[in-house]
Image (cartoon, rainbow, N blue to C red; front, side, top):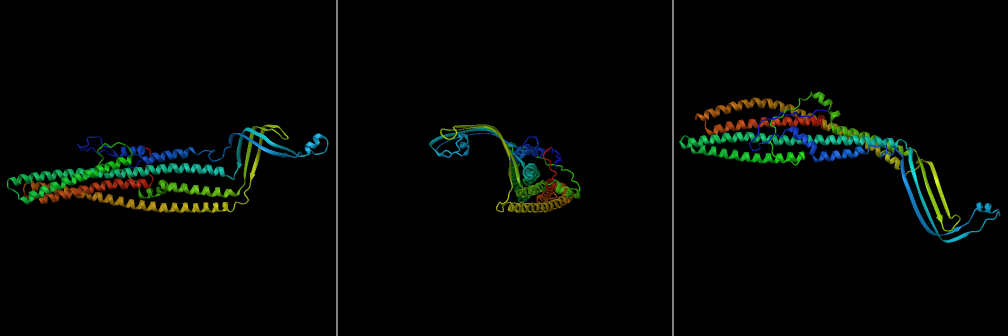
Length: 446
């Protein structure tokens, strides 16, 4: 089995508001495969389809049944004996017609019968192959559902973890604004600053506090969406990973070569083409004869209150062969062949369309990943500059050489730099997950 796309590194940063063990990405993915409703439904569907792959379901085994019949009648009869009765009497003359009114008759039969198609132009073999292909499609559809679920869980996890990181950064900014406000409040009490700078510090503190509460609300909503996507009833808020390490991707050429082999959607399209091909062969077999063998061992008893025979009994084995040659079907067989050929052409066109679309998605995703990697390296260098700038601004502000507005500007610049780096980091995780999804590198088993 192929490896799962994501290897996780547990971040030790926790929040006092949670006070719980970290919910790792691996744990979320494993839980999704167990609890996600769509995955569970598709798994049952595969079990149902797999149980249908039998020779009997394909009509390749005899049908054995125990049959019993009972019937009764009351009717008027008119019988004219034949030459058999003339020879039995020895007179050479045929007796006249006999009439019987209100004849009561009953028939009772019971027996064990079997019917087996000996030759059907390969229809049984084709039906069995169709069942096998259907089982493969069901397995691939289960894999597709698992991969879609894993990708969706990664997206929801990244979204929630990104908001958690923004909360962390906003919490730091809030603390910085609180410290600046305290300094400005102390200076104001000593007459070392004007009212405008004091009010600006207070306004910045209130603004940061409002932003924090808004982010907290967004994070909790995103967290609930993550739990809903997983499909479990657990609603406990636990901190998420903020540092997620992804697999090292193979070179572009290797990924492109494995695109058509590993992508589940294309694999399903290939199976659909094979199913259409089998359907075409089956439609052609409609022009060929069918040979069926039948056998029956049973007992039959007939009784009539009046007539030539009062009762008849039969006990024994009967059997025979049946040959059916289609001569005329009103054009249905020819129409069926044409429809099967059209279906095969459609499936081939669908495969080509899906292949081009998936390759386009892969190329766009790969280009975005390269862009994010370059941007991440650039933002790492920029972050160091913003950190040094804020440290110097903070030092100058503490010595009264810088105004609160100028310190606020340095603070916001550092905050935005940290946010950009965080967003790019989570973007790389999401983009890498998409590449693994497109190339079939997701594994439903760990």
